[in-house]
Amino acid sequence: MDSHFLGLTAIVTLGYQFTFFIITALFRFDKVTDFAGSTNFIVLAILTLILKGSWYFRQVVLSLFVVIWGLRLGLFLLMRILQWGEDRRFDDKRDNLVKLAIFWILQAIWVWTVSLPVTVVNASDKQPSVQAQDIIGWIMWIIGILVEITADQQKLAFKNSPENRGRWCTVGLWKYSRHPNYFGEIFLWWGIFLASIPVLEGAEWLVVFGPVFLTLLLLFVSGIPLLEASADKKFGNVAAYRSYKSKTSPLILLPPGVYGSLPQWFKAIVLFEFPLYSRNLPQEELSWNRSSQQGGRADPKIS
Image 1 (cartoon, one colour):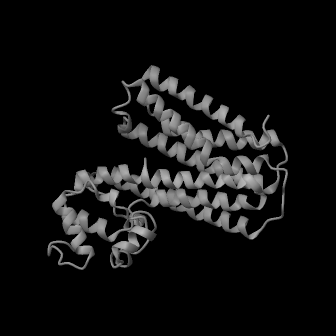
Image 2: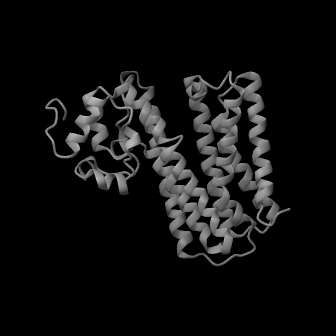
Image 3: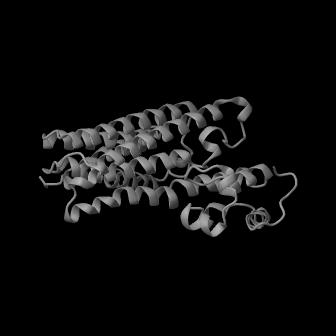
């Protein structure tokens, strides 16, 4: 058995995801995909903790954090998809075995990679006393999961309200970020990495690729770009939506008055407002958006 459990966790993750892939492929049942991903994190955290058997305080805390996060997110997403019906992400994959397999392979990579900090901590023989990095990391995790839970519940309640049908969510945390749930998730996983730092040595520092991978995935691949494209196609011709988008941070929670007054270069470099998030806006509306951000005259109908 490898000393850092990297091979073991890779094999377990592939086996776990392959099992759910078979269920999805045979029964065309795609409602368990997010549940399979979230609970896989729990399996790895508990497995590595038990196999090592040292039960150091840092190991227990970080493993508990992963279990709480995985259970909450997995059950939330499962209940939501059972309520809403089919997962639209699989509309082009249910009858295409290759595309379906690629999705499950990518999900396995996501689980294994993001779990790296906890995997290495649980495999470690080092147990320094609690340090500043631990406390800051724990606080980041608490803030992150509270933001994620709050944002998820606020959006679910918004979408379940009949009067909000056909509208974009602007309540609660969604006033301050277009994707506050993703901010919470990224923040808590960086917190877990920070709390793992006291035991890291040499090549073990490569576990930073876990939160980096998650951040890049949500910023550029399967998170914000897909949701921004979907919202732009639905609401891109609505003046109020364009105003909301120009004044609301894509990720980090900020007051609209503050974000809306910042220069575009600062938004792009510091606050992740990348051009790809607006490439699906109608061209004439995109021109208006740029003009308003540069101090041009706004449509008088937009508040």
